[in-house]
Image 1 (cartoon, rainbow over the protein chains, first blue to last red):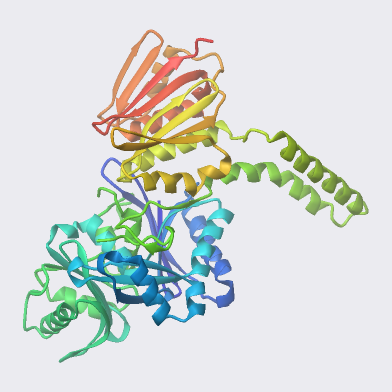
Image 2: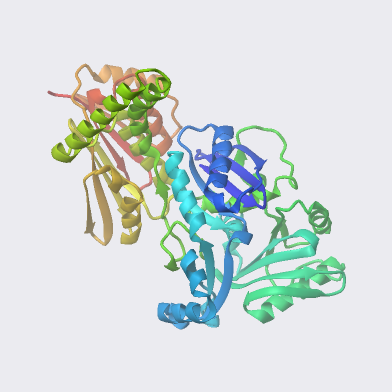
Length: 297
Length: 234
């Protein structure tokens, strides 16, 4: 199984096979490819997939892909009991009709107490391009996910995050703009981005429970300023980066916070070769997590 | 917590989706098309260009007409069928919902039965790609479990297989320590992990034996797999 994730112009891949001891990584790496013409996105993804397939050379490639979150649209709306009628009404009110024609919307429940859904809009051109490219490459795609949501699946499968009552996936971003996903009792409770500064934080955008998001931001600032040796608003925190912001990752990792873990699949999975894994440089592989959905690790 | 999969149809989503896009089996068709394409490309600058175009057009018309009027059976190679079964055994190991229940390699067809608790998982599975091959299938429900049964074309009536050959092959195959092998009369049986069954099936294929026997693969309640091989009586 070939797991691919995208972060801007960088594409990370991890090839694994089922083995007696669970999934075994046989190969991993990355390629860089610039999108030269946005009107030819299908050709761009074809070149990406073809290059990675040829790097891996595993016969009939079965793959998963995790998109960069900048490729999709997020929104939220009230929808008691996941009423499709209400969601459609919301989309009609809040979106331009032209946008609705070019975007496919997927609706996921937040924690039922909130009575809200998270809407993820993905351009039809992207979905169509992957379907077409699988046809051209005579391949199979088992999953198409996005950014931190794919990393969350990885946290569950690789590190059994769901055994904690609450956990946080923390993606450290460029210029201290971080992205976070908080799950409580196996339900998405808040998804937000905030700007981390030395003394206080500023919310960039936020979906779901606002109060909890605020507490998490304060918690991170306290840890950052050495006022606390443990996150108190959440049981376990998993963190990673895809933008190469290693300085901040190393800073937090070296604080030796009790309930903070690097989200790196290579630190958990068996690898075919015994070479030492660089725990920071391979962190971007966290977003290949959707490849492991439903698999015992 | 949900696991987004944008391969599924848009709208309100369940926590997980097994939807996929698969075109693995289409490799077989490409092989048969290639020689024609190459011939046309090699000769396009020759004086015979027009004649070849006319010839190619005639051939296409004849093939298309034959296709329309005769509705031929889909041609699928034995290797491809075996690959499909091996894929299903592997997938049964890591998909929570979709499980290979049993596969029977008969003389003229292979019947593969897949079980799932959710009907939608089976519907997605059949919509994924198998429907495009005109592979006959039926979906049914028994004891609260949903099943899809697919019939692949197969030529399994070749002669020359013996139980001794199977025993000898087993000694050459690398198995896990969970393997159990029995043989009696015309039957050869193997209990073990999915990897054991796959290793043995692939060894049989490599040695040109796969079409010389009647085979059945069962996924047992215990999670183990059971392979039963019988010599062809015809």
